[in-house]
Length: 276
Ligand code: AMP
Ligand code: MN
Ligand code: MN
Ligand code: MN
Image (cartoon, rainbow, N blue to C red; front, side):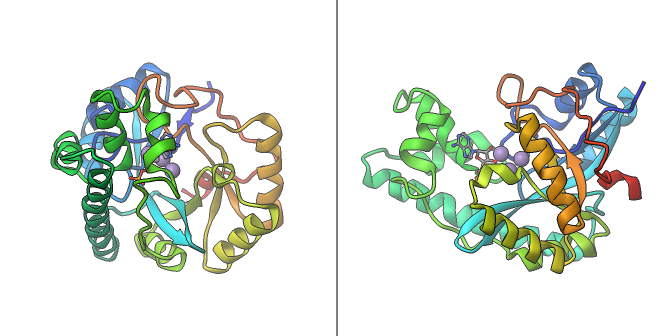
């Protein structure tokens, strides 16, 4: 049986619905052998995931998904096979957490201007001891009956340019790639099709990423069709990047791709795990 890998997933330590323990059990149930936990801007769930992985006979790869500000937009860079104890990385994550917290307060203020009060407190309560993400705000908007579902909450309030959108000076692409590299990991451009970049802008991103020492491209990711997978595989060759694969799992029924989906990369790709 080929080894099944899912190298992009979230837990309750960011915007996922399952705790690291539940996530590991779910992955095992879906037939995953190797799971990367890649929470947004935090590595705090990794120890728990690893503890349970051992118990359930599954291998957990230490990961993180960094929010990056690049040319006035947000890009996600996944770090895989990192040392989550890297002091430099921890310092970067501390600053990201501060930015996230400031942003959450500002999102709350913007929603208050729209007549929706106490949203920061409610979103923070949902996030518990972890950082507040936009999906936490979306969930509260749905729970209060203000929006019909999470996509609707993003569309009306939380997406770029909408009523409660707050632009954030996340870490730069250069500093993100450098922090992942210093932590001994590989950096991966997450879900490249989701940014809706023009061909030339995506080319510019990949050129810069490669020059900065970036390693790989997520060739298989949520919402990609076969044609896009082959296009991304050809971009890997063109820019000299390895390839990764992941569902971007956030919880049962919440992701575009279920865990355990057939994650076979095109033969032309060099898998990012080939150097592990
Ligand atoms: P944040 O890191 O707090 O800005 O939250 C980003 C997360 O919000 C992404 O990782 C997705 O899980 C989720 N997200 C972003 N855009 C949308 C959308 N249009 N609809 C639903 N969820 C979204
Ligand atoms: Mn997310
Ligand atoms: Mn992402
Ligand atoms: Mn993700």
